[in-house]
Length: 112
Length: 113
Image (cartoon, each protein chain N blue to C red):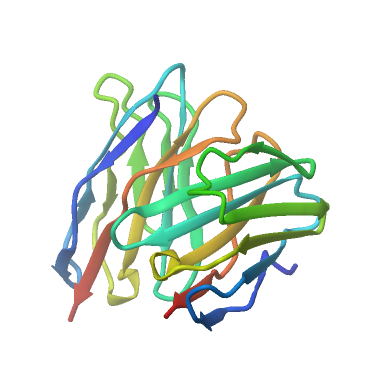
């Protein structure tokens, strides 16, 4: 079945540091890939997505490129802020789009 | 626009009591999802509905859990009887069919003593 593997957290960075959160996937067919973010005390929000190979999703300074050859969708940001502290979930959907498979989430803590 | 609405936001109850969580999806969305989030198991899909019909309830942990969607604008998740291991944050989400993008509610934090 479909699965998503994320690097374990927590990831702790200083403000303005470079961020990478790794995500790899296993899927039948050609999935669409997503990053969701969950701020403390809130529900998940879509951060960015990519629907086909070599697409780059971007939002709020975050980027992720759909790499079919390595089955990866790593999340990057060049300079993190304290306000980026949250839990980040990688996810994929295949087929009809109703079954969204989430990774376990990676907690990011950004300190001054 | 109002997002997904969940109530209550917090619920504290005693073991053995019935708990009902409520969700109002975004108007026009025809898929609705119930998730449970815990530290140990992360985010788990419990059940999802399409056009008010339960499509996949394989994530429902046991018969104590039941979910209904009597109409397009309302769904409930009921736990009877509740147990301490049911303590978690329960999220409701909705989406357009086959879009992949979920719009999540703020969640209900359930504590069973």
